[in-house]
Image: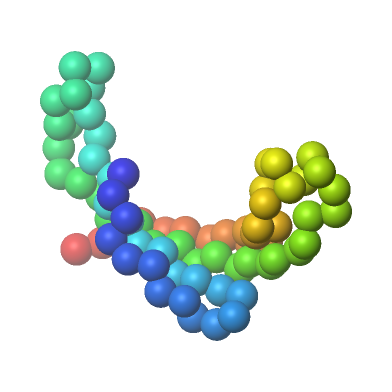
Amino acid sequence: MEIDSILKLSAKSYEVRWSEERRDLNGASLGQPTHWEAQLQTETVPPPGDDAIVSNPLGFFVTNLTWTEQQG
């Protein structure tokens, strides 16, 4: 997977575009890359305790995600 772009749409949403290429167990390409686009809704919540700080120090969460394959 290769990230092509990340665009901040608002304070709580992003558009992400990326490419994926299928490979066999030896790493050889299995065809042309596919291109994808996603819309992410996010939220930042301060970590409530030490365990949360270790697992997610920024308190950044994706609350909604939609994606689609791009044609052409």
